[in-house]
Image (tube, rainbow, N blue to C red; front, top):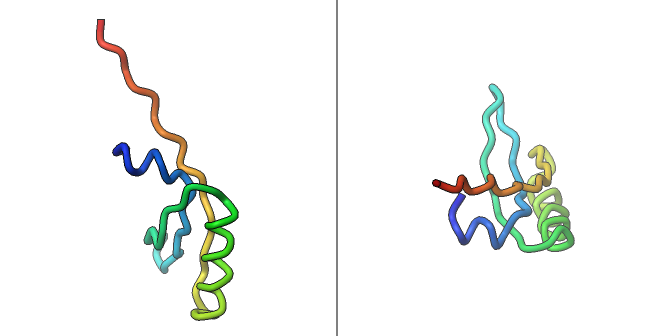
Length: 63
């Protein structure tokens, strides 16, 4: 996970057929993600969207 992705842990995901998904946007806080989700649901009522929180993977320390 890149540094910029760590700054924006909340993501809105569009669910597609055959278990595919697309990251629509990344946000710093959940309320921003929820606001964009509501707008997307109004613009694309047939689309299926979810909000996820991407926890960054821990950095391995080399000894």
